[in-house]
Image (cartoon, rainbow over all chains, first blue to last red; front, side, top):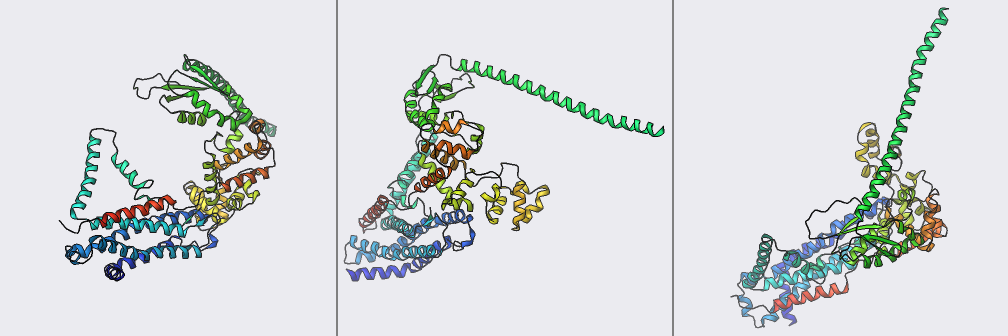
Length: 221
Length: 362
């Protein structure tokens, strides 16, 4: 089993190494860039607001990077299978669930690199910065949030990629039906806001995309 | 003889304008008196109109009394009494013994049908509220519109806003904490770090002279203030070259520009909410009669009034205020445990969906 996992991991690494490496570099660079200039201790009281504004602006890149990494790794994981019309998978002497599980786990291992890069970059950036009094750094919380977002994004896109064209069609059909009902409700002047309700279900509370929202701040009060 | 004639003519010539000036002053004085008289007349008429409007607006209305609150309201399903019961402890808690004065300033509320499109007569006094408001919302309206008793102009000018009860004072304290940390002023930062004199400066409790140097200590702050707030104001006319010099980091030019501002237009480094929170702390320290003492003598300096209200020294009030703010620091930025579990749960669920996918590509 371990040998099989190694083989799957190796092949997935070959297919997605460029994405993983670029993602790792970006993940390491964003925290450092967001605190650029913060090491200067001579900026006085003007610094705190500017620093928070800069950190907030750069903070929007973390969820985007997490989503992009999840999407690209999930796609590259399944791309060769899709290209070979899944014949290779059919010939393997392992059950389907085991094969999928191996691919899924290998993807997580590959995604550990960008997550570690965020943690290292954030720790390095905060260690070298001179923070104004009252502000605190949150490298571990940020890396943890990033890890969760990467995992969720990867799992969502992995599940979609693992499905058949029919599954993808069903998902798209449900989305289209929602939009259609909303349009009809708007035309009929009905008090029905499906888009907002769906958005709330997805993004708020324990929704699947809730981890992407919130405050992605490396520095905060 | 000729000289005498010349002197006489000169005296006559000089006397003309002086006489004219005298008569102009007298005319202006008469006009000012007349305007004052007209203003008083208008004031009297406005009072009469107000009184008549009040009578017209409250015709057929009931009076609800809860504590010292008097609410004149038309019969409707609006839960005024319950709302007043909820609002009264907050109002009484802030104004203390002075809240008894509120009996003289009744609310006038007209509850209206929220679904009706029938045109209503326009009233110029009181509030109009839809009668389907909840108890909580109605109580919030009562609290947010309560007239602060004996609120004098000096106190209003210093505070920059009216002093009213708050349902969640910790939100206000948190907002002030954020200001203390992020305000672009070394003085505010020093206050945050514990210099009580600086706190008094930025809260405008000290002597009002030399505010500029005490509020904005460093040249960078002054330059940022000019460029951030008054760039357009100084960009035209005689101040344009000085603005240019200020942009070139010449502190003398920045100071000159800021000192040329009309009195009272220099923005204080802390927003009114900071002074409000200080007064609330002083009232909390001073007990039930604190507000009465605060408004008792409007001619005193604000610092002395706050001190009297609190019943302790001004430094102690400010120290207490600072401690309360530090305790109100926003919670640390963490991912809640349930959010972590939810994210991992969704990851597992989507993984399960993938695992259960078919191997047959049909």
